[in-house]
Image (spheres, rainbow, N blue to C red):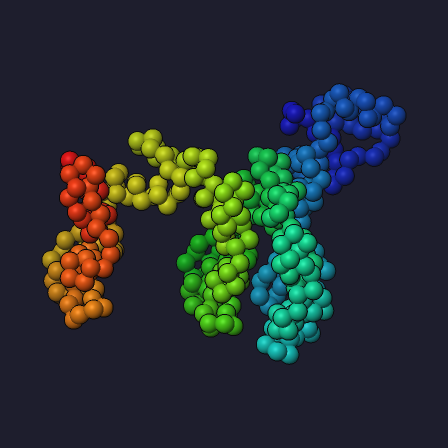
Length: 373
């Protein structure tokens, strides 16, 4: 569709007796022939915010206009797209809906009722597929999309789809590059106020989300939710090819590349491809970069990784962190302990070269030997 042709509309298709295309001077459509002629003139509906900002989806236009209209809280600076949203937010500051268990303030009575279920353990909403239970119906709806694979929220700029509208909203900002929220401590900017709030906890050290089983604390609620699966053993993300299950969706996405062989992360200097971004970054650091930002405080030797410095310092300090569980011997390196356990206590398994049958206690040493053979 030619993006230079757009009907003068706001939030919904024009419904006047005469429709005029403001960029195609002279093009107009009467009410009776509008559907036919406009169908020929434009292949899809368009929604206008300004003459330079046109959307093909009404949902996108509505979301965009909300971003342009912001009501700001005079107590914490948070912005809202409507006065009603700001008014509900102010209930938090007024402590109108306060939890008697933990003191948390909610923006309305429904949110407070859902929050109280965290204390009571009540989970009235059950998944009909896996029987997992939830405190709120909306959370169940979102969870159900794991089983159905439904991704109803589609980006109209790149066709990427999401199961949550919030994920689509965050993704859209990757196209615009807008980052209106700035950290007052370090100046880093963010596309959403929630991301700024989470980032601010790096400076404050605040970890408000605590596990009620082991007392471990987290700066983000999502981190706490993922941590809770360690205690429950819940692995809701299942591979449809081998039935292996994972605690996090990202782990499942990485695992799927084992089956597909997909390596989407390519090194631009040498064109080598990797299945994970962390593997690419490590490759660039070790192969293509000469930066050695870590230095030994004893001899000044420079290293690429902090862990390499820590291991090197043992030479100067004679630190031996690896101790044998069977005797009083201690070792500077883990491979020394492995060899000791094999030779002195018959614990472990020797790794043999399939060409010369030489034995090794460490797989890394076997790989080096194989490369030199």
